[in-house]
Amino acid sequence: MVPEGRANDVLGAVEVTGQDPDRGASPGGGSGGPPLNWALALDLGLRLGISVIVGIGLGLLVDSWLHTSPLFTLVGVVLGMAAAMFTIWDVAKQAMRR
Amino acid sequence: MPIFAAGELVTVSIKAEPLFTIGPFTFTNSMVGALLASALLLLMGWYFTRRSTLVPSRLQSLLEFPIEWMAGIVETSGGRMWRGFVTLVLTFFLMILVANWIGLLPGVGTVGEVHHAEGGAELVPFVRPASADLNFTLGLALIAFVAFVSWGIRINGVRGYLSEFLGEPRYMAPLMAPIHVISELSRLISLSMRLFGNVFAGEVLLATMLALVPLAVPTVFIGLELIFGFVQALVFALLAMTYITLAIAEHAHPDEDSSPHVAQPAPAETHPSAPEAA
Image (cartoon, rainbow over the protein chains, first blue to last red):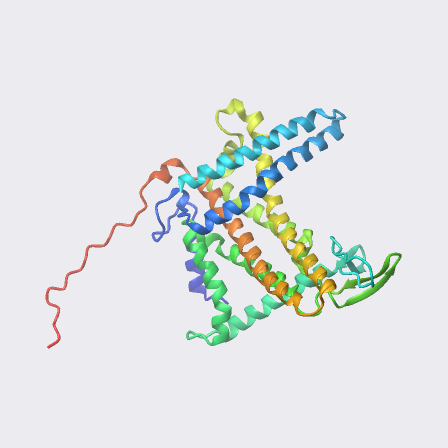
């Protein structure tokens, strides 16, 4: 088991507004670095495709519910593609901020 | 999993096969895999806490290594609040790693009950690697999803989180809200599908190689699966950490962001009267 003193140290450091003096000066405290960027790069490709698929899926669901096919499916395609582009923009923004 | 029937194609069931039912609850072979992984981790944890010494033995060093290594990555990349989620990231890493590697043990996927179906004899293994079941990976992804959304809310409050969700300027909210919803859902799905897809594809590859060339050749692929299992566990844990870190960074106040947090260097101590060795 974790010794009580050590557990308190760990829990004590988890303060939403507090700062760990050991950390760097990046936004949100994130110092970034290769692991973070590698993970984001690995994730980006899959998320682009999935965003469009999720958009189409949600559109199909709404269409089958409201009997408006293919109106919301088309809206879903557009929103899915917009979400894919937003994902790229968001990831690039975060990477530049770091 | 594999069908062992002469002259037939090798097939691997995409969903976990039920073993038995207790009332309305169906117990599948992937659940056995998940329970085995949990039991192994619990055993390791028990050993680690009972027998650990300040000067570690070889086994203790072996058990400590992945934990220290992963915790080091989270400390370097996880931002100033890394201590708050390091345990979650470590749990993801160790659980997925053990669950993936259990699939490579002898008897897993190959020892089971033979069911005679129309197309031939089908083997239902007693143990299936937990990560080769979408329910397991989706469950882990849901935990990660709840974690990074709750960190976002914790940092910025519900109102702040929702205002981030609706975007600026506010009249764009009808467009930005669904885009944000799709973007958040894509994280959840990409996390679960990547892990499931890679581990399941590995199972199919191993079953195919075993059916084609039963001797020596599958060893190479088992070695590759050992690496892939590790990489997938690492990727899942790193992505969970990344999402939490971004949720914290995204919602942090700009004023806080720009404030200098760099620790001032302590004045160098001088030792004017340091005795010199005679």
